[in-house]
Image (cartoon, rainbow, N blue to C red; front, side, top):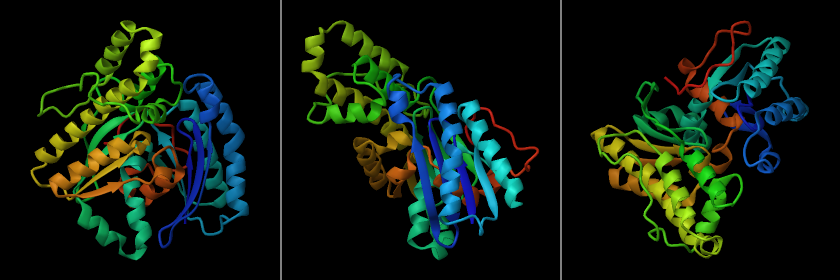
Length: 345
């Protein structure tokens, strides 16, 4: 049994994972409503909320499934907000000493990379090694509030970053776009909701870096284009065209992500067997449909993280520690530190 803690940003989360059964228990305390009042995540408030809620969540696990079968404590050690990460790391170290089991640091982005495989394991835990081998090499698209990455997972489970964003992440672009439109936070779901019934071709927004052989993403130009457009419109015009604005803006984000993913699949020269999507932005219905279509065209298996594992959660951290042990930090209680912001090597 693996006990996991996640506190990288604005979600306090704990989980218990049994390799023979899957996720036994998962608990999450969300801070979305709190930060929504401020238009985005406030680091000091996020840290305070972790201090208030990580302990009670662990108590619920202890009083429920219990810790008797725990053989390892794992915790997100980066990237994320340093003070928030420190709360989780401190709790993990204390539990490691109390339970007399090893403590392991896990890269948050590795958790996202492996999260689409959680349902595969749940279907048949005993057959998972064979199912995983059949899906590798794997192309992972990680799209969250702070990260946009294409990552190759090789047959030996080694991760290699193929591309990232040169400026804003896809989630940032959606949040900032929603703020410009006066919709609030978090922006992605609000834009998707208002885009329903809108014309995605009504406004011609930029798609980032246009070169087909270039895999890096860029979303800052999209945000700037929306700002300039809104400066030319009256408040009434914005409200009247809100559905079209949201649909067109969302389409620009989705199209940019789908184009770069398509290019990565082609550059793999048939070397991929599966395509996965994860991260908070992957809940977007248009994006999921677009990536599923790219997988069909490329003739590869399509794997999408379940909605409960797209945001910050401890289940994916536990699963990554078990699936990808070589990529984790097993330096021990004394040496485990909060890692700087970095993508998985």
